[in-house]
Length: 262
Image 1 (cartoon, one colour):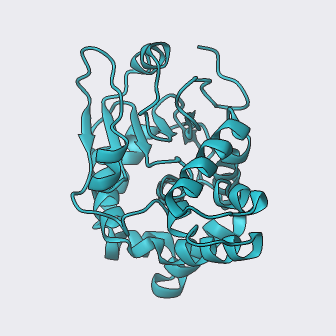
Image 2: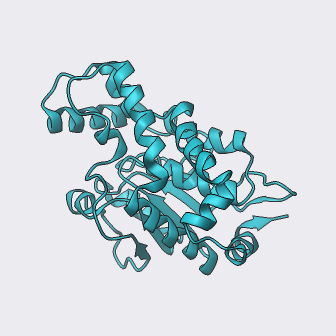
């Protein structure tokens, strides 16, 4: 399939499916394209979507969701699927971040404040931390395309991708650019509407449309809140990764060898 809208793979039943490689890195070189993929979950993938994904040669899938989320939204796989699927057992807060922030009848300002709070705690969510450890270890070990996803492919996935980007030397402007592509990648209005239906059904409440849009979108202040927690406690992403994610210099060297081209 032809890539559209800057690195986005147009699929029918999977939102926000895109390549987060290709960015320049500090010291020269850039990340390889076609190796690092991110998306929302694949429950609603149609047969054409599965064929398109199969052609990418993805050998490792990192599922950032909790056990309950995987049970609620099982991913469809192509026939003959053989990729390794990595995840940490256990439940998150039981909810995707946008659902965690959505409880009750809330307005836009409340939605934004809650998303900031949820992101501020994201670097220490146990299931996310344990899965990020698996993710970084897999990037160091396997020289093949990988995919990371959560439910909507924007919050936990956005944080995971930001960590990988910084560890490999992607500039923070490019890191944020990639994060914000969620707001323009693919069928935006359809994704927001679907998310709104789930939120309203879960809470049986009248949540304002602008609050739904905030919950189902990304904002620089959200990711900044997560990175501020990292810097407050550890100084920088590299030190956080070493202290919390069991990341080592040897692992970084291995990932750079596999994913950075000069």
